[in-house]
Image (cartoon, rainbow, N blue to C red; front, side, top):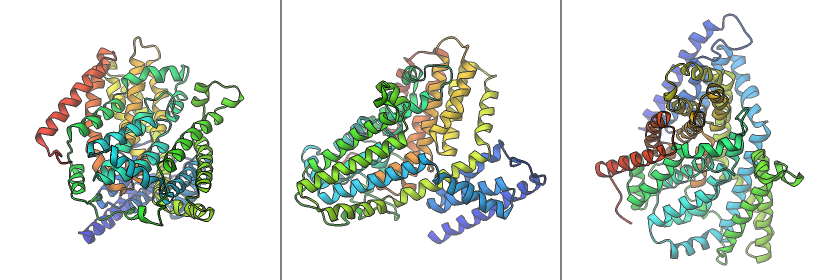
Length: 538
């Protein structure tokens, strides 16, 4: 089976190469400043190739690189030198030269080091023992994971890695599959951040609303952010109803038998056992570092927004540089953690320093996937995917105005899924939505902006090349493709219900439409519970 899968991958790669080269070589006969396929449907082919190959071959690194290769071929018109230069000089090296991207990687490394420190000091094990006495069921472990994810609403990266490191020992103890843990983390990262006024996402969205009070628009849009709200409703309801379906049902059934991974690929298996764990570790050895990390990251973010120069808290948060703020906060959190363990004498200075490269190694899979994903996004940017989608949205505005929220939701889903970025989708679509609806009475502009945000989060949630999806896999220490394939059916259910709800909202234009969405969601889950497998064992 594995041999056949490899053959399929090679054949698909060869077909992709010839399909891309043949038309592009002809189109590029006359060299222009922009590639011949700029701002056309071809600009979305690279991420589609990467996503399809990843789902077929279950191998993410080569799939992402083939997507990058296709994008470079399209850009260069089949020229070998141009293709190589675009992949590396204008692609990979360029994205790794971005200060915001480097900041995210540094944040990842520091967080990996902190997780290693907490494990080595015995804090994670002590918390697991404490939680074992207070969290007695699988349902309790899953609800505790959701609660922690909701509480950490500052930033989705921070949410994914922190919730994963804290809750992983507890969910393992109660035989919750790593795929389910990854879903719980992912479904409480972006969906919670996009409805939290004090978050890096609120800051990003408020900056994309030209001519309006961005923060006010964000707050008014919260009741209409159906995908985020319904995802949370769906997640909690499924845990309480003990119902699973699709590939996730297989993972959960196997987890009840002791296999937390199901698939042969388990890149993090045994990672928790690396190194000696201090038996003198206490719960405070986990709680103090985590609390310090939260406080320091918040201070770091408002510092970059000018809070200590006289700017008010909300404004400072709205104009903060999340990448820099998280690096500063995580650094000081790391310092506090090291000092705590030295004072308590649970780790020596040499042991603390040894955790830094170990933490780096634990984050290598996430760093590699992120680097490839960023490079793939740069390919779509260079091919004008944003202009193609923007023009598509403008042309759809001439149709039924009341249907536009639902249409915008679908377009945002597709764009975020293809590019792997919700923030980039905000930046492309929100200014267009504001321009289209600026003279429209009622709340249609607010509903459409919220549909854009919801669709962007939905596409980001589904996409295997999304940085948040990658972080959730890393936080849960789950195989990335397993996380994507098990999460996708759940995300699609929430997306379909959200789409129907936006149709109602376009005509009714009332926050009460959320009630319609919740009723539809509960109806769908009831049908799923009666028609598909559910989990009744503890």
